Length: 142
Image: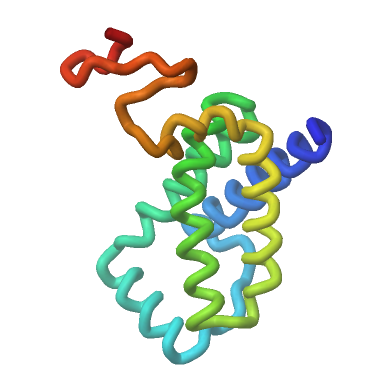
């Protein structure tokens, strides 16, 4: 599984670096969007909001490729992947296969560092593994 997650991490990093840079450099010709997606993308381009998602693709992609801060990179890319899925499900279904591939790669990469996400999935926020309680003011074991 370690080899699979490493390959998935590199592919995910390469895909997001390529498409993030393409947002600024336009070296991959994109097909014309559907009417609804075109209106949505038009509003993003006019407001210059496109800079944020493209930077939020490039920075975590570089972190994945450098094998540094993987949980942070996956957290940032998780929101991006969710938005990509929503756009392709509701507005531009032609790109859904690539969106599903990216989602699978994200889950394969996240599975390898799942222990990093365990604390945010705890039922009680003031407990740590082993049953010790955290002090509410310092967030350290009491």
